[in-house]
Image (cartoon, rainbow, N blue to C red; front, side, top):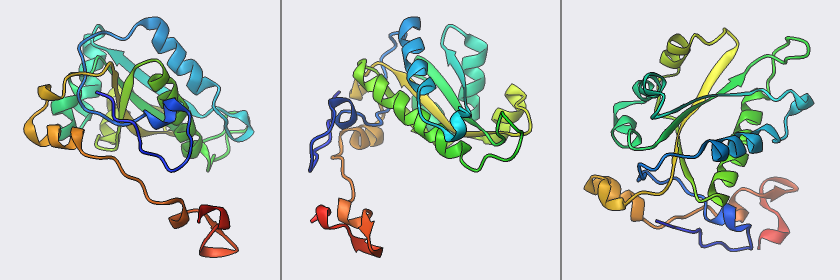
Amino acid sequence: MEKPAVTDHQLLPSIAQRWSPRAYASTPVEAEKLCSLFEAARWSASCFNDQPWNFIVATKVETLAYQQILECLVPFNQAWAQAAPVLIVAIASQNFKHDGKPNAWGEYDLGEAVATLAVQATSMGLQMHQMAGFEPEKVISTFKLPAHFKPMASIALGYPGEVSSLPPDLQERETAARSRHPLSSFVFTGEWGQPASFTD
């Protein structure tokens, strides 16, 4: 199912078409496509070019690792995400690699990397749903993360599936109209809350 954004201004198709569906086909994601996705993340911008992003990835072929990630999700997300052929945990390093000092921008940079990955996925006919609904401490203990690494999101990835595969309440969410706040509500100039002139 496609659900492109109704935009006020021109966007790249892969941005306008990106959204967060929950219906996934069982079709495996090819290894070369997975490599392209993480190559896109690899070339994201980061403070000091420190590249503080890390990913734990499991396909359904890797049965144990897949089940381990799935069990880190909250039950609501487990119910639909188990259909996705790929599960991912996105993790930020909280220390710089070059000097070991705290990196206050690591989480921001991870977000940039995941956003880049998401746009690349959309351009390749894939879809992904990012989730806050998971247990970070369980990820840390299950995958034995070092002390300065912080799990920030879990992600379901795959090819689009049939909306009818979802329960009725999620079918309604899947087909609901998309919306965003207007530019004037968050793009300011001069002082806080004063919309930039070009947003009129």
